[in-house]
Amino acid sequence: MVQWAIELSEFDLGYETRMAIKAQCLTDFVAEYAGDQEEATTAWELYVDGSSNKVRSGTGIILVNQKGTQIEVSLKFEFPASNNHAEYEALIAGLKLAEEVSATKVVVFSNSQVVTSQINGYYLAKDPNMKRYLDKTLEHLGRFLETEVKHITRDLNSRADVLSKLASTKPEGNNRSMIQETLQKPSVTKAEVKQDILEVSRLDLGWMNSLVEYLEFDILPKEEKKAKKIRRKAHNYTLVKNILYKNGISTPLLKCVPPLRATEVLEEIHNGICGNHLGVRSFARKVIRAGFYWPTLQKDATKFVKKCQPCQMHANFHVAPPEELISITSPRPFAKWGLDLLGPFPQAPGQVKYLIVGVDYFTKWIEAEPLATITTQRSRKFFYQNIITRYGVPYSITTDNGTQFTDSTFRNLIAKAMIPVEINEQSPRVSFYDEVGNIKGHKEELEQLPEVREQAQIREAALKQRVTNRYNKKVIRRSFIPNDLVLIRNDIGVNKSGEGKLAANWKGSYKISEVLGKGYYKVTDLSEKRFPEGGFNEASKWRLGKSKS
Image (cartoon, rainbow, N blue to C red; front, side):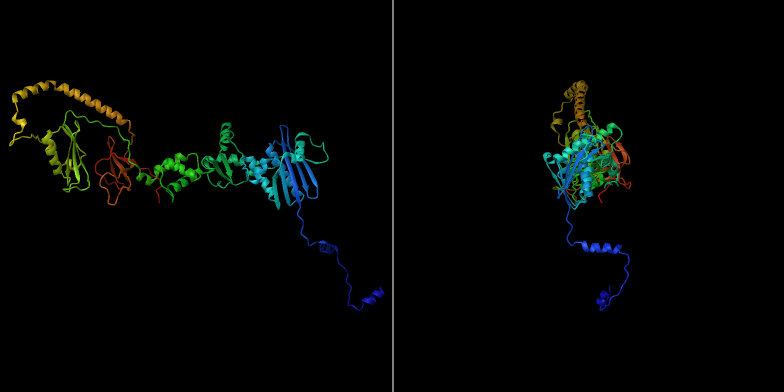
């Protein structure tokens, strides 16, 4: 020690006592033995197989690493499971075992084509239980750095197949050379799935509730008939990312629409930027082509089109008569006339653009004359020259009660007895008149006149009855009551300037103020102003709906 002290004296060294060495030892060990090389990845191969029978179910699991280390597990189930469920249970249990041995890369081998294809995305899991198992398997696969799932034939997976049959057939404890365990409950339960939140859960799903509960949660009503009906309907539906779809015929999938959003879809397709105001049938087909579906699509489309304001304004005129035919009989020729004014028409030579027409109800004979203006004097002159002087004073006249026919001067003309006379120039009727022979022949004819008149009336009544029966077959009744909102044909009255063939067929809305009977009504505008004059029988029910903004 003295020699060492002498040798080291030339260095300025000092002695210090050493403190506790536990922490220092750990630090020195790590610093000495820690290498710079990267940690090698641990790759394992996983062979799984499931077996199920009437007695019990089980799986076989074999886990092998690159060094040849092999772990064999025979897993027995204490719950019933199908073959596909047993395959998924085997895969989930094998992945858990790989996690316990700190595997980073796993290559899975299974002889179940259904399971491997669903995991790889080739098959779609429609069954609710299979979908839950698939989601659970994908969750475990995501915990590894690298995974691969391969399908192999049964002969290449014979050892795992033997282990699965061992678990499903023989009782536990007979073989001590392998790990034998028991699984008390399935890896996926309904309680776990109920915690999921659907994307559309914030809405009232309506008709979709029962289907979503069954497909997502496997919940069925307690009544057997309802449960059976839902199971049968569920085959046509599927859930994709928590959204309900219907398996279509013309298209692969149709998105199911809840009741609260049905009107929004109809509004956009019918009145939206690409809408073209189709009829009910084409409208419903367009909704399906757009990729949407709900059970009452046809019914809702019908209601929506009936309430669409542009569709009502441009609707076709009614072809079927709204009321039954009212027959008018005439006792003899030229006894009953109907008068009416038509126009305005395009102006003709002489500045005439109106037409006054008289029709005999018995013979259907027509008298007409063009007019430049429609006044009481013009109507009076036509009636006197074209009807009274030619056919005598009529028994009755039917008009639309226009001012030209209700004026006092026109009524006075009808009240007077008018007899045409030939004074200046005698016609052959006057020149060859034989008073004695004429009176005798007239009396003979008068004796037979009642019978002739009766036969004529019978034939006329029979003809009109046949016409009435045929006409009434086409009747589609349209009746209104006071305060009903209606539309009126736009071709009644004078057209507004600028309106062409693309103008709306109906105008309004108007309100029924009085029921005149026989299909005729008096209407007012919404400000209670009487318009137009007279009565109308060509009207369409105005259905209040959401107007296009």
